[in-house]
Amino acid sequence: MRIAITGGKGMLGRTLRRRLAGHELMVADLPEVDILDLKGLTAAFNEFSPDVVVHCAAMTKVDDCETKDELAFRLNGTGSANVAYACSKCGSRLIAISTDYVFSGDLEDGKEWRETDAPSPRTIYGASKLAGEKAVHEILPSAVVMRTAWLYGAGGPSFVHTMAKLGAQEGEPLKVVDDQRGNPTSADAVAGAVEFLLGHPEVGGVVHATCEGVCTWCDFAKEIFRLLGLKRAIVPCTTVEFPRPAPRPANSALAKTVLAKLGFAMPRWQDALADFARREFRIEF
Ligand SMILES: NC(=O)c1ccc[n+]([C@@H]2O[C@H](COP(=O)([O-])OP(=O)(O)OC[C@H]3O[C@@H](n4cnc5c(N)ncnc54)[C@H](OP(=O)(O)O)[C@@H]3O)[C@@H](O)[C@H]2O)c1
Image (cartoon, rainbow, N blue to C red):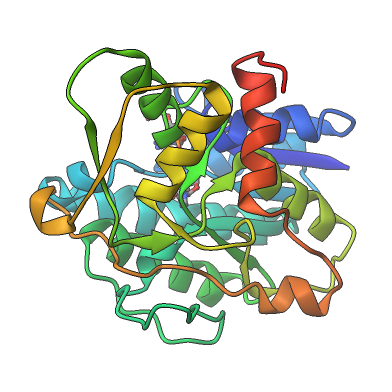
């Protein structure tokens, strides 16, 4: 297949390029391709003529989006609309990557957000990504919007890389938030779900793709430390003790209803993390 990856130089984009290396790939990232330049984007897609576009380009710094809201809506909203429009002109299928932040996070422990649940973002990042989702489906109703969460991948930056660095430093016990729940997810697992959907051209709509299992950031940090043999102490703290410009969802766990119906299972988060740690930090266990 001919596959274009917007944001192909980013964390998920780089993993997709490795995973899909057997296909003909086009990296649509800055400075060569700007998703805000509709004319240039359409010309680039016209020239490459992709069968599928995986749209990863985005403004992903959640806290920055709060202060740069105009830019966030331009990139995540208008940029996604441009990608969908360019796909419609070239007859390309679109898989657009989105986020758990489209949900409020107000959900009882033990419950998960389904693809059919109504989004209600609390942050500019979430609202701008939701604007992108809506634009994508308005312009290209057959497109897949694939939501993922708590992502880490080769080279980072990610929570895993931050914890690996902080865990190796001496100092006070590390405080990690223990009242926010979600699904830690490897970019490789998301790339696996994308690869699976390449073989299912009939699938459209919203598809959740996070690793299986739910934990808190504190649980996630403890597992990273255990895998990497880091001895620094971790102490649980609350969201209130660790304020951030953009409010974080308390429970953003995603149910993989659509993938499950198709018979595709995402890996358990602990297994995906162990696999990643082995490759990224070259450790044997
Ligand atoms: N990271 C997470 O935890 C997470 C969680 C859930 C969902 N997601 C979603 O997953 C997708 C991929 O995330 P990621 O973590 O891989 O993001 P990332 O590392 O920030 O990669 C995004 C890429 O898009 C590029 N880009 C920015 N503006 C562009 C433009 N105008 N035209 C073309 N390319 C542009 C960026 O280039 P520059 O670096 O030069 O700006 C970067 O290479 C995003 O849609 C994100 O919303 C991420």
